[in-house]
Length: 62
Image (cartoon, rainbow, N blue to C red):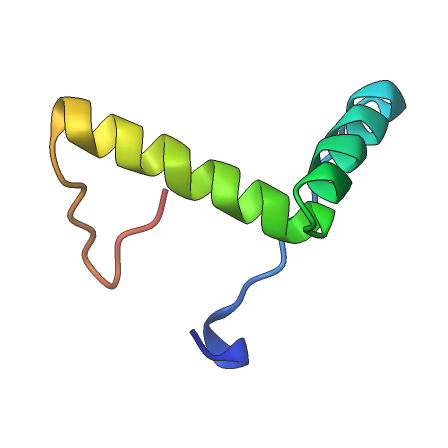
């Protein structure tokens, strides 16, 4: 994925959760950003395994 395909997303979260999440990311040798990306991918895969593949149109927004 090129940098042109990347979007910025702001997340507001309690500091304690972010600190614990940072601990998990560091434990796994990842940045918090990459850890979150891996978690999102895993969640999408689990959803698609249960419900079916998500098909998006290019002009569809969530």
